[in-house]
Length: 235
Image 1: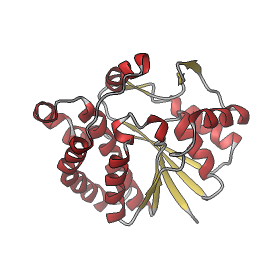
Image 2: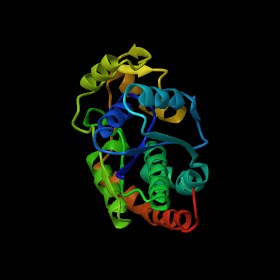
Image 3: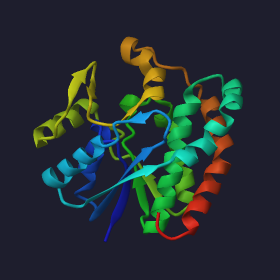
């Protein structure tokens, strides 16, 4: 049986990824994460999973997982120091995604899943966690643990994914400035950080070398967390 895990919010990109995966995999593990610091409306993903099983194929397994303790170790415990050093709020979003990646790898190792993906898309590469350098470095951590990491909708145009989901009958929420509201969980700190881009199309400046340095700085603790969490049985 071929299995894959997918970081899943229920938004346009992750839902489009979930639809694409249905033709290639027998079981798709949808992983939704709550970092405990500003995430809200988490139950929205359950509605999307129900739609996937009804409209696409009955092969989706959903888990809502807390990564609070991981997020605290990667971000909160050193937030003041890191902000002074890197001088940017990107450390919150990138650190949060690293926590999710660490938890995904641990989940996959304990469930025998050897492929993992997310809804990263080049149309949203203004987001630090979806920059090519970020994806490349994260992919290496997966590879070290025997897991193939990929991005099934990276080259897909969001308007095409949106149209495909509408055609299949998914509820798409409220359209606003190229986005869809009220279909996925919210992250208040992330929304505040990226608000200038949403309103004025002023992307935040993420110097590639600075992002690379941050990921390198956090990689050791990410690997420690994976080792700790994948030792014991279950999740």
